[in-house]
Image (cartoon, rainbow, N blue to C red):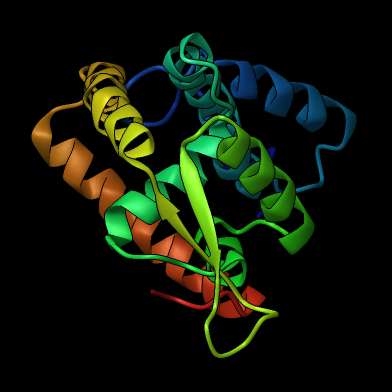
Length: 185
C-alpha cells in the first residue's frame, strides 16, 4: 500500500480532528512529488519536531527574562532535582550534553553565583558541583512558571488524551533510547 492509496494520518479522511497543520501541508507536497513513498513516519516525526520547536520557543521566554538559556536551566534543574552534588560528567549524562558544553556552562553559572565547584579530596581531577542558595532560589522561582506554561500548552487536550499521548511518547522514547544506547534513569 502506498501513500496515495491509503488515507494518510494527515488527510481529512481520518477520524478525529482535522489536520490542517503545517506538517500536513508538507506531507501533501511530498506525496505530490513522490506518490510512491510512505510519508507516515514524516507525519509523526514531523509533528513531534514541530511541536517540540514551538513548545521550546515559547517555554524558553521565562528563562530568557531571567537571563538563562535552556541548557543552563537544564544543568541547574538536574542539580536541584537530584538533590546532591554532581560531577560535570554526571551532569553531561543527566542533560544529554557534551563534556565541553557542560564545562563552559558551569563556568558561566559559577561566575553568576548560581553554582559552586569544589575539588574532590581523593582525586584532584574530579570536580563536584552544587547549587548555591541563589541557584536554588532561581530554579524554585521559575519552575512554577514553566509548569504553568506547559499546563496551558496542553489545555486543549483532555485528561484521557494527555495520558494516551504521554504513554505513546513514553513507548517511543524507550524504543529510541534503547536503539541509541542512551542510559535510562
